[in-house]
Length: 175
Image (cartoon, rainbow, N blue to C red):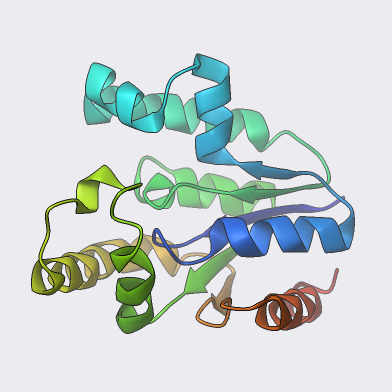
């Protein structure tokens, strides 16, 4: 049975690599944020706004526990998922965990063009955005680094790089 959780900061490539990896292994791919949105028929932003962070994180945890029961699946978690409750420990106990580690410079470049889709980033100057990323990574590092595997997510810019990363990840996880 294959059950792999991809963790890391927003823009790390969890969805990009997760979809390609799932295709290569011929297993389903679940993006936890998309899963939550489908279940509740609301965007993550709406749920976060309506419920507040504490209630949203509880809901997120419950949905994580639900998808962690799926067999033969690749799960991309939300960037904050590992940082709440015992989520990291839970994922480690229910499958293989991979932290997609990406240098702040690369995250900045990726997220700078995605601020429209990510409300938390809107309105930030380049300097504010970079500082925001560096600060968030420092706060989340103690959780991300609990993953069993650390993988360089900085090389997901082309089809070739994604294919190479899939092969490297297959080798790392021996799947």
